[in-house]
Structures are given as C-alpha cells and as structure tokens.
Image 1 (cartoon, helix red, strand yellow):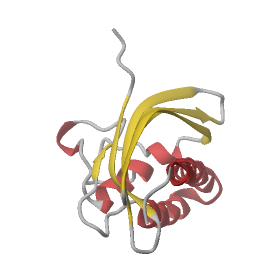
Image 2 (tube, rainbow, N blue to C red; image 1 turned 90 degrees about the vertical axis):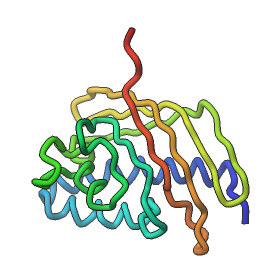
Image 3 (cartoon, rainbow, N blue to C red; image 1 turned 30 degrees about the vertical axis):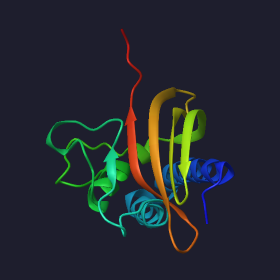
Amino acid sequence: MPISEMELDQARTAWGDALIAISKTYEADGIDGARALAESVLDTAYGYNLGPVLFKPTLASGEKTFRPTRKGALSYFVGHDAEYPLDIGFGIRGWRKFEAVTAASFIDGDVAMWMGSATFTDKDGQVTKAEKSWGYKKCEDGVLRIVLHHSSLPYQP
C-alpha cells in the first residue's frame, strides 16, 4: 500500500513526540530510563532491522559522524557510550517542543522522502533549528520506518 502525505506527517510528529518523551524520561528516571525508551523508539521508528540506516546526525563529527548501526544511533540520542565519546545525548537535552516545516516530499509506492526544517525548543525556551531529510520505507506491518536521516545546522554565511 502506498505511503500517503498524512502518514509522512504522522511519522514526523511521532518522531518529535518520542524525542520529547526521551528528554522527559531522562529527567524523571535518569539515563537507564532514557536509554530503554530510546531503544524502543529506535526499534519502532527506524529501519535498523532492514539493514544499515543512512543516519547523519546534526551534532556528530569526526570518525563517528555517520551512524548506520542501531548502537551508534542510540549513543547519539542518549550518550553515555565510551565508543562515542563526543556524544552528549541529543535526546536528553530537555526538549519540550518539536515543529517540522515541509520544504518538499517525494513518494513512490512504499518509499518516501521528506525534507524541511525542524525547530526544537528546550525547557528553558532555547531554540535549535536544524535542516532535515528523512527517507522512509513502509514495512509489511504498515509502519513507516526511517532508512535515511540526514540533519545539519543551517548554513551561516
């Protein structure tokens, strides 16, 4: 069954809601709670069960910039992994609001691409804006799973 624009919207909303939930869980239950939730989110939202995910996080650099493995993605979201010493845990930064604005999308059957801007607001009202591209594959269970996730900070000339 082909992917719809509504499903793309729902997938982005679910991703943002999950990011906020990881932040709140970290504040309430510490790193163990945040890690458990982040693992669940990765299994639900990302296609690591399909193969490598083409994931380039916003705040990653050096030899471990790209995160094709679930372990690398988990470290990006919650940190606390000696194999990824530069990760501070993007998902545990106190996020309270997520908004995505579409620049364009492309749908071809059970594969879809989306790009646009995303705004993250933390509990202190600080705003971070990123430019994102997501690629999705609709699995046999009907769930859209992220197979490409590229994120970067806007260019500042």
